[in-house]
Length: 192
Image (cartoon, rainbow, N blue to C red):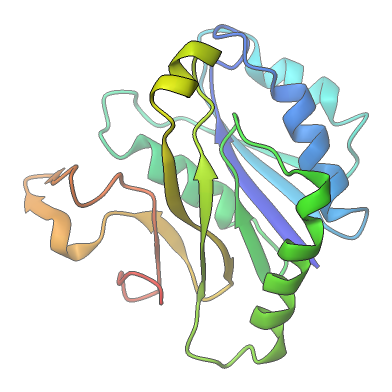
């Protein structure tokens, strides 16, 4: 079984097609799976709209967070809040502008099988290529941003945050080394 986790805020204000994506996630994990979304305090009715969506997605769980938008680690902190509610041993991080391609499910199933085959193995998870589709078609085609995300992992990943090597002190971190959402183990180190 799989737990998907994510963080959301102001999705109505910015007109994201969050409904389609959340339904996609809930369908992907099936009735035995779990989708957990940490909803940070928003300037719109994000919370109310997601509560309505729970009627269509019984495996959708919502939690409220109230992390200051001035906190430079807001993304990692809200994702950690969702991760902490994940109940299944395999977890997948999704951003609210991402969805699963149904024809690719077999590859995700293979990754799950590899991770569950030996839960005591030295691997915490896998980096998965992701295509950033935020913006217009013209922007996407011009700046085709393909990155790697530490997306699927075991429950050995305990938080999303800044790797120690990126810490600069006084609450700051090097944004060239970290986006504050790296998968961290219980000792605060980057997962393997």
